[in-house]
View 1 (cartoon, rainbow, N blue to C red):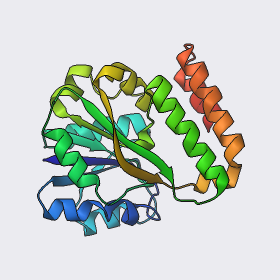
View 2: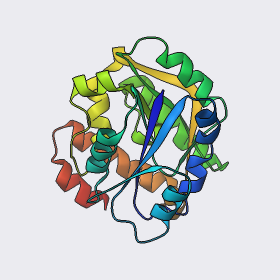
View 3: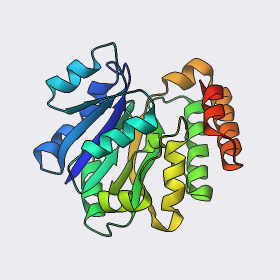
View 4: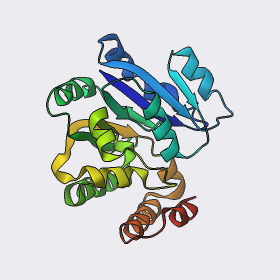
Length: 224
Protein backbone atom coordinates (compact mmCIF):
# COMPACT_ATOMS: atom_id res chain seq x y z
CA UNK A 1 0.00 0.00 0.00
CA UNK A 2 1.04 3.57 -0.75
CA UNK A 3 1.08 6.82 1.19
CA UNK A 4 0.89 9.79 -1.18
CA UNK A 5 2.77 12.83 0.12
CA UNK A 6 1.91 16.22 -1.40
CA UNK A 7 3.64 19.45 -0.30
CA UNK A 8 1.37 22.51 -0.55
CA UNK A 9 1.42 26.27 -0.17
CA UNK A 10 -1.66 28.25 -1.18
CA UNK A 11 -2.56 25.44 -3.55
CA UNK A 12 -6.37 25.44 -3.37
CA UNK A 13 -6.63 26.02 -7.12
CA UNK A 14 -4.63 22.87 -7.92
CA UNK A 15 -5.26 20.44 -5.06
CA UNK A 16 -8.67 19.04 -6.13
CA UNK A 17 -7.32 18.12 -9.58
CA UNK A 18 -4.25 16.47 -8.07
CA UNK A 19 -6.37 14.44 -5.65
CA UNK A 20 -8.97 13.23 -8.17
CA UNK A 21 -6.87 10.44 -9.81
CA UNK A 22 -5.94 9.11 -6.37
CA UNK A 23 -9.53 8.37 -5.33
CA UNK A 24 -10.06 5.18 -7.40
CA UNK A 25 -6.75 3.78 -6.12
CA UNK A 26 -7.87 4.52 -2.57
CA UNK A 27 -11.14 2.65 -3.16
CA UNK A 28 -9.18 -0.30 -4.57
CA UNK A 29 -6.90 -0.33 -1.53
CA UNK A 30 -3.67 0.68 -3.27
CA UNK A 31 -3.54 4.16 -1.73
CA UNK A 32 -3.78 3.93 2.02
CA UNK A 33 -3.62 7.64 2.79
CA UNK A 34 -2.86 11.06 1.35
CA UNK A 35 -0.59 13.24 3.46
CA UNK A 36 -0.83 16.97 2.76
CA UNK A 37 2.31 18.67 4.09
CA UNK A 38 1.41 22.34 4.18
CA UNK A 39 3.84 25.21 4.53
CA UNK A 40 1.47 27.85 5.89
CA UNK A 41 -1.31 28.32 3.33
CA UNK A 42 -3.61 31.30 3.71
CA UNK A 43 -6.19 30.04 1.22
CA UNK A 44 -8.55 27.04 1.38
CA UNK A 45 -5.83 24.38 0.94
CA UNK A 46 -6.13 23.00 4.48
CA UNK A 47 -9.93 23.05 4.33
CA UNK A 48 -9.87 20.99 1.13
CA UNK A 49 -7.43 18.54 2.70
CA UNK A 50 -9.69 18.12 5.72
CA UNK A 51 -12.82 17.75 3.57
CA UNK A 52 -11.35 14.81 1.62
CA UNK A 53 -10.03 13.08 4.75
CA UNK A 54 -6.36 13.64 4.03
CA UNK A 55 -3.78 13.66 6.80
CA UNK A 56 -2.69 17.27 7.32
CA UNK A 57 0.81 18.13 8.49
CA UNK A 58 1.54 21.82 9.05
CA UNK A 59 4.95 23.38 9.41
CA UNK A 60 7.42 25.92 7.98
CA UNK A 61 7.42 26.40 4.23
CA UNK A 62 10.14 24.92 2.04
CA UNK A 63 9.46 21.97 -0.24
CA UNK A 64 12.39 19.92 1.06
CA UNK A 65 11.37 20.23 4.70
CA UNK A 66 7.70 19.74 3.82
CA UNK A 67 8.52 16.49 2.02
CA UNK A 68 10.57 15.36 5.01
CA UNK A 69 7.70 16.13 7.39
CA UNK A 70 5.14 14.38 5.18
CA UNK A 71 7.25 11.25 4.84
CA UNK A 72 7.78 11.14 8.60
CA UNK A 73 4.01 11.18 9.16
CA UNK A 74 3.16 8.62 6.44
CA UNK A 75 2.40 5.06 7.56
CA UNK A 76 2.73 2.91 4.44
CA UNK A 77 5.58 0.75 3.22
CA UNK A 78 5.62 2.69 -0.07
CA UNK A 79 5.72 6.46 -0.56
CA UNK A 80 4.58 8.44 -3.60
CA UNK A 81 5.82 12.02 -3.57
CA UNK A 82 3.69 14.19 -5.82
CA UNK A 83 3.64 17.90 -6.64
CA UNK A 84 0.31 19.59 -6.08
CA UNK A 85 0.07 20.92 -9.64
CA UNK A 86 0.64 17.47 -11.14
CA UNK A 87 -2.17 15.11 -12.18
CA UNK A 88 -1.51 11.41 -12.77
CA UNK A 89 -3.21 10.06 -15.87
CA UNK A 90 -5.49 7.00 -16.02
CA UNK A 91 -3.59 3.74 -15.68
CA UNK A 92 -1.02 5.03 -13.21
CA UNK A 93 -2.33 2.87 -10.36
CA UNK A 94 -2.09 -0.41 -12.27
CA UNK A 95 1.47 0.37 -13.34
CA UNK A 96 2.43 1.45 -9.82
CA UNK A 97 0.95 -1.74 -8.37
CA UNK A 98 3.08 -3.85 -10.71
CA UNK A 99 6.17 -1.86 -9.80
CA UNK A 100 5.79 -2.16 -6.03
CA UNK A 101 5.29 -5.89 -6.39
CA UNK A 102 8.84 -6.26 -7.72
CA UNK A 103 12.06 -4.95 -6.16
CA UNK A 104 11.63 -2.73 -3.06
CA UNK A 105 15.14 -1.31 -3.48
CA UNK A 106 14.26 0.55 -6.66
CA UNK A 107 12.40 3.79 -7.25
CA UNK A 108 10.23 5.01 -10.12
CA UNK A 109 9.12 8.25 -11.73
CA UNK A 110 6.38 8.92 -14.28
CA UNK A 111 6.65 10.27 -17.82
CA UNK A 112 6.45 14.07 -17.94
CA UNK A 113 3.76 16.03 -19.79
CA UNK A 114 2.26 19.52 -19.75
CA UNK A 115 -1.45 20.31 -19.69
CA UNK A 116 -0.92 22.37 -22.81
CA UNK A 117 -1.15 21.30 -26.43
CA UNK A 118 1.01 24.12 -27.80
CA UNK A 119 4.05 23.20 -29.94
CA UNK A 120 6.32 24.93 -27.41
CA UNK A 121 4.97 22.61 -24.70
CA UNK A 122 5.71 19.55 -26.85
CA UNK A 123 9.25 20.84 -27.42
CA UNK A 124 9.77 21.33 -23.68
CA UNK A 125 8.54 17.77 -23.05
CA UNK A 126 11.10 16.50 -25.57
CA UNK A 127 13.89 18.17 -23.65
CA UNK A 128 12.66 16.58 -20.41
CA UNK A 129 12.73 13.14 -22.08
CA UNK A 130 16.27 13.85 -23.27
CA UNK A 131 17.37 14.86 -19.77
CA UNK A 132 15.86 11.72 -18.28
CA UNK A 133 17.46 9.54 -20.95
CA UNK A 134 20.95 11.04 -20.80
CA UNK A 135 21.21 11.99 -17.13
CA UNK A 136 18.54 9.82 -15.45
CA UNK A 137 17.33 12.95 -13.65
CA UNK A 138 13.55 13.18 -13.45
CA UNK A 139 12.35 16.20 -11.48
CA UNK A 140 9.79 16.18 -8.68
CA UNK A 141 6.98 17.09 -11.07
CA UNK A 142 7.30 13.56 -12.46
CA UNK A 143 6.46 12.08 -9.06
CA UNK A 144 8.67 9.68 -7.13
CA UNK A 145 7.51 6.21 -6.05
CA UNK A 146 9.87 4.65 -3.53
CA UNK A 147 9.67 2.12 -0.71
CA UNK A 148 10.12 3.44 2.79
CA UNK A 149 13.00 1.01 3.31
CA UNK A 150 14.85 2.37 0.27
CA UNK A 151 13.99 5.98 1.13
CA UNK A 152 15.37 5.61 4.64
CA UNK A 153 18.46 3.70 3.46
CA UNK A 154 19.25 6.66 1.19
CA UNK A 155 18.76 9.15 4.00
CA UNK A 156 15.54 10.58 2.54
CA UNK A 157 15.06 14.10 1.29
CA UNK A 158 17.42 16.75 2.56
CA UNK A 159 16.27 20.16 3.78
CA UNK A 160 17.49 22.05 0.72
CA UNK A 161 15.91 25.29 -0.51
CA UNK A 162 16.08 23.99 -4.10
CA UNK A 163 17.05 20.82 -5.99
CA UNK A 164 15.87 18.51 -3.19
CA UNK A 165 14.41 16.25 -5.88
CA UNK A 166 17.61 16.13 -7.96
CA UNK A 167 19.66 15.49 -4.82
CA UNK A 168 17.62 12.41 -3.92
CA UNK A 169 17.41 11.06 -7.47
CA UNK A 170 21.20 11.28 -7.82
CA UNK A 171 21.55 9.15 -4.69
CA UNK A 172 19.09 6.63 -6.13
CA UNK A 173 21.22 6.32 -9.27
CA UNK A 174 20.40 5.29 -12.82
CA UNK A 175 20.68 1.55 -12.13
CA UNK A 176 17.98 1.69 -9.44
CA UNK A 177 15.56 4.06 -11.18
CA UNK A 178 12.64 3.06 -13.43
CA UNK A 179 10.79 5.49 -15.71
CA UNK A 180 7.17 4.39 -15.95
CA UNK A 181 5.02 4.75 -19.06
CA UNK A 182 2.12 6.54 -17.35
CA UNK A 183 2.23 10.31 -17.55
CA UNK A 184 2.36 12.90 -14.79
CA UNK A 185 0.59 15.88 -16.35
CA UNK A 186 1.88 19.11 -14.85
CA UNK A 187 0.42 22.61 -14.99
CA UNK A 188 2.10 24.78 -17.61
CA UNK A 189 0.91 27.97 -15.91
CA UNK A 190 4.39 29.23 -14.99
CA UNK A 191 5.79 28.37 -18.42
CA UNK A 192 2.98 30.18 -20.22
CA UNK A 193 3.51 33.19 -17.97
CA UNK A 194 7.30 33.37 -18.32
CA UNK A 195 7.66 31.87 -21.78
CA UNK A 196 8.62 28.25 -22.43
CA UNK A 197 12.04 29.01 -23.84
CA UNK A 198 13.00 31.50 -21.15
CA UNK A 199 11.93 29.30 -18.26
CA UNK A 200 13.49 26.15 -19.75
CA UNK A 201 16.82 27.95 -20.27
CA UNK A 202 16.77 29.29 -16.72
CA UNK A 203 16.08 25.82 -15.31
CA UNK A 204 18.92 24.35 -17.38
CA UNK A 205 21.33 26.99 -16.08
CA UNK A 206 20.26 26.33 -12.49
CA UNK A 207 20.69 22.56 -12.91
CA UNK A 208 24.10 22.98 -14.51
CA UNK A 209 25.28 25.28 -11.73
CA UNK A 210 23.97 22.85 -9.10
CA UNK A 211 25.72 19.89 -10.69
CA UNK A 212 28.90 21.96 -10.73
CA UNK A 213 28.65 22.49 -6.98
CA UNK A 214 26.79 25.79 -6.57
CA UNK A 215 25.13 26.49 -3.21
CA UNK A 216 21.39 25.56 -3.41
CA UNK A 217 20.52 28.58 -1.24
CA UNK A 218 22.03 30.95 -3.80
CA UNK A 219 20.30 29.08 -6.61
CA UNK A 220 16.98 29.30 -4.77
CA UNK A 221 17.34 33.08 -4.52
CA UNK A 222 17.90 33.18 -8.28
CA UNK A 223 14.96 30.85 -8.87
CA UNK A 224 12.61 32.99 -6.79
